[in-house]
Picture 1 (tube, one colour):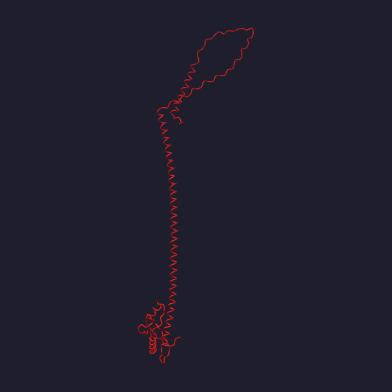
Picture 2: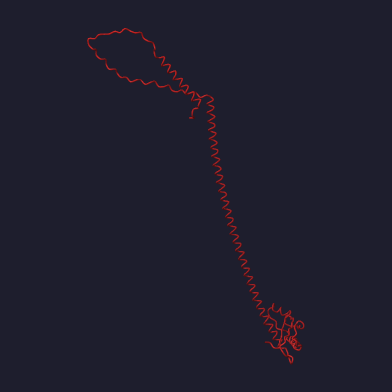
Length: 265
């Protein structure tokens, strides 16, 4: 029950005071206040004392009548309207409280779902980064392996080229010496040759080793007879021996330089 308003409390107090005043007046007027006239006094003589009267029976006093029940005043239309407005406000406040609680729970659920969504997105992003990292590492490893393989192949090719070049240079040197030895077998040294002069010739050869044109004297020895003897020997030794390696033979066909001394050390 809702507590009594101030107006209702004042109305109940006034009604109680009015009831007590009426009750007091009823008590006052129910008592007779008249004075009786004086009566003559009569005395009786007894020869003997009369028997004492029986002891009065003790009677219990009757309880006072119960106080009349407090009559509650009927609420006025204004009180009823006020109470209805208060009840409406209470219900509205309760409804708003429930709405706010419902909204709070909804926001919490949304925050929770948003946090879970962000967590899933972060996990997916990390997985994607890990996948990209693994793919990049794999690609780099494959590229490194490919580059290493290419480098190994290049080094092997370079080694092979170096070995081939060394073999070719060795073959060139060998056949140059063979050519010089063959030409030297045709040299007829002039008489009265003194010292050890050096004559340098350049010759061009055909693929079969034959001379392509006359030998060219690049540097004279200082002895014309010795230079002529070497030139005649070169022409007589044709065709000259050629190496089987085409690359080595190619170096012989264009500008083969030959040096000769009467006394080879």
